[in-house]
Length: 347
Ligand code: NCD
Image (cartoon, rainbow, N blue to C red; front, side, top):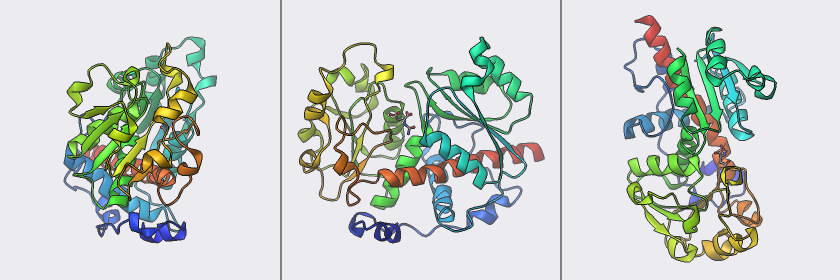
C-alpha cells in the first residue's frame, strides 16, 4: 500500500505497511482443508462472525497483491460457471464481479436483465430456476427489493452472492470498505468511524454498521433526522445531525450518496442546502483527525454530498483504493464459497 501510495503521489503517512500475508494460493487448492468459511452463500454481513470477516479480508489481501502483478490469473474457479444477474444499474459492482470471476478462471455470464424474460412477466424465481437448471456454481444477484436475494438463494442449489438488495445489505461493499480501512489504518478495530448522509436508504450503511460494529469500532452516524432510520437506537451507534460535532476526531469519514431512487417524498429541502450542511469539504473535514481518510462507495454526486476537489485529493481520499479492493474482496469471497462447493461435492 505504501508503495502504491507513493506511485500515486500520495503522502505515505496515511497508508501504514500491512501485515505479511500467508501463501493462500497453495492452501486454497489443497483438498480436505478445514472449512475456513462455514457459509454456503454470502447474503449479508449479519450472519458472519468476526473470524469469517477476517478470513475474507486475509484472502483478499492475497488477491490485492495478485491483482498488481502482470499475470493476474489464478484457477480456483476453473470449470465453474458464474452468472451475474443485475436487476438494478451498476457500474463498479458488476464490472468488479465480472473481472473477479474471470481472473479466477470461471466461465462468467452477464445476464442482460433488460432483455430477459423478466420483462415478459416471468417472476424472479422462475428466472432463477431456469438458470439453476443450467448448473451454475455461483449466482451474483442485485435486486431493488430488500430480501429478494435471500428468497432466491432458497430456491437454487448453487452459491448466491448478494450484490445489493434494496436498502437491506451490500456485503461485498462493506467488506471492501473494511479492507480499505485495514490497509490504510493498519487495523480494523478501535477506530472512530463516521458514516454520513442518507443512512435511511443505504444498504451500504447498514452492512457497514454491522461489520464495523462486529469488529469493535466506534460508529457515528451523521445526517439530517429525515435520513436516519427510525430504530437507530438499536444499532449501538452515536447519532449526530451536525457535521462539525459528529466528525470531531474521527479516523474515517464515509460519505454516502443521496439515494433519490428510494425516496418517495421530500427528505431534504434542496441539494444546495444539503451540501451546505452535510456535504463534505475541507472545512468540515478539518474537524476529523489530521490523518483521517475519506471514503465513498460511488457513484458520487460531486457538489451534493462531497466536494469534487476533496474526492480527488490523493492525500485524503481512498475512493479509488475502494474500487481496487472491490475486485480483491470479490475474488476472495468467491474463492471461499467455491472451496465449500468442492468440499461438499468431494464428501
Ligand atoms: C452503492 C449501491 O449500489 O448500493 N454503490 C455501489 O455498489 N458501489 C451505493 C450507491 O448506489 O450509492
